[in-house]
Length: 253
Ligand code: ADP
Ligand code: MG
Image (cartoon, rainbow, N blue to C red):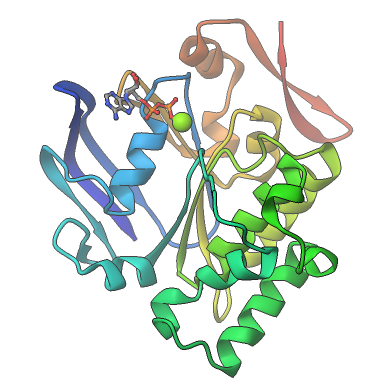
């Protein structure tokens, strides 16, 4: 479980997150939704222990993330940020291999190579493994970063808008893979994912956490909480949840 207790974060002298008491239960997919500037990315950084809270604390399976050693944080939580950029001339396989650092600390072994190969296979990157990152499309690069986060082999994966550059096929593909990864069983992952594709949230998320202005608006099962009324208030624009061919879709109205 990830817990925040009266979590407050200030950046540049401004309060960005304020008094958040959240509990993320293990397993499944939690969609983090809210308007631009709500504090979603800040929250993911705080959950990963990459921001020191001004108030309160974050624990991951009881580990106090502000006090934990970087290696322990990196074994608990993998964070895919919104603005991943690499300037070095790296191949896809190099990048995905970085995910293994907390495990091998610079000396990759057979198990690390196996995990990297598995991650590339899972995210349909095997054919691209020798390509330089700067020769890929935005969506291919995004998949490579997601595979790196997967290869880190953490119980928690925090993904900040991983669908933003993906075409419809790869968006669906990623969400279905994440569903597979979160199915109960040995090695199951728990996923917290920032989504602006609200139909993807309605279709794939088990739970939802809605933020606005650095505060919690609502949280709970997606099937109950993702309603047109809640979303219209959250985003300040008309949104409706409709059922098409048995699936819930979110449409502007
Ligand atoms: P979201 O991901 O929900 O769009 P962010 O967490 O990125 O929102 O940002 C929340 C607020 O924090 C925004 O108002 C943003 O301008 C502000 N902010 C983000 N990073 C910084 C920073 N490094 N310094 C000052 N303000 C920041
Ligand atoms: Mg953001």
